[in-house]
Length: 452
Ligand code: NAP
Ligand code: MG
Image 1 (cartoon, helix red, strand yellow):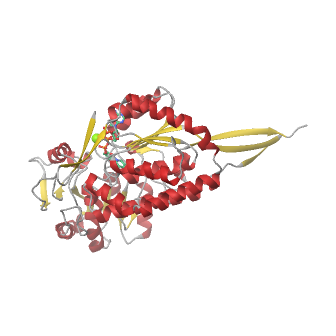
Image 2 (tube, rainbow, N blue to C red; image 1 turned 90 degrees about the vertical axis):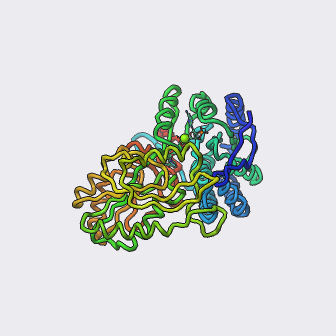
Image 3 (cartoon, helix red, strand yellow; image 1 turned 180 degrees about the vertical axis):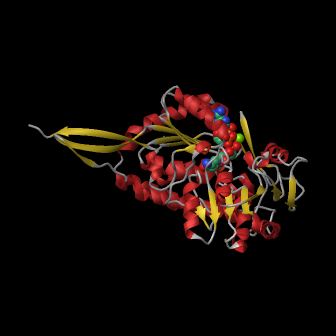
């Protein structure tokens, strides 16, 4: 079967690929299994050198990769360049981590106890369409650093950058069979990887709904799973915050990647005493977001990923919703959707479900306790921000909010060096930083008797 890949900004085909099915998935797992013994035996310094070379190749091919990602996802080229820069950093980081992730010796009676970090074997990586290359690297870097071999399944809509990355892996000298990329459907290839007895772990990023299927499917073979799922994060604005700065940065926190961002701060909680003033500032800042051609250096927001997704996003904006601002968007072709701000209560559907589009719900709160209550009144727990000039309050709120990744007086979530992942139904397991290695290795404990 042929897979036609579209540019969501023009609706034009940009590639035709052979679509993988269950048979190809089995063959890829077999290749990865065959490559595992030799790959795990590569000396740490040599494995580090290969990852370092891959990082350098990503840098050298940075513009090409950014163009691929921009055309396939519809994301602004400036953002795509930044993302590719991060991919290179990820491989540099994990190149450096290969020989710094080690076991320990533990004092015990009658001998010596030691731990080893063993690779898992073949790992299946299932990736969504919003940050295809970035999220692939977050899994691939630690998986390879720990000595695993990989079958990577990008989303059906956005396979191009992962396919190019697999070619760069070979060019870097990573042996054939270590990294296998399959363009195919989640319900076919993804499902096969989840159930395959020779796959030891699934590293999954995607929706909470499919995350549940991954957990269920993995139960059959007691596969390890890491789940990075949806979010409905809060951006909490206290009355003593730098309101100008908070408002200037709030649009980026929701409308980046056209709101198709698991960390989107799509609930903006504002203290009632500054609510009207903040909303005015936020509307002005949102009016300034430049929506249009993703190839333009100055564009800040592109289209949504598909016609079907645009329908889902639009379905949230029925007559019951109080729209405070709706921006401009090109008419078409392309799956455009305007930046939209709505005034809402936390009980409303728009404040409860992940819209995954450029729509933010602005919600008033009464005091610190109320802000914490509302921030936590969601099944999700991925990300969030707290804006205040009171350091003690910032720490109190940070400790009380049930989410894996928080910022104070900033709206960023992702750094190569720091752990990333969710609480509650946003998933479990951590990616990035040294914590990212834990999900791709198994701890082995060994006792060696010293008694003669
Ligand atoms: P999705 O529908 O859950 O798909 C994610 C991946 O799973 C895709 O590769 C998809 O393949 C595959 N898949 C679908 N059904 C499957 C099945 N039955 N078995 C195995 N694999 C299956 O998510 P999406 O629509 O691509 O992305 C949006 C979601 O991802 C949002 O909820 C967002 O919050 C979440 N996300 C989370 C993070 C995080 O780190 N927490 C980061 C980014 C995105 P096909 O698309 O090819 O069918
Ligand atoms: Mg989907």
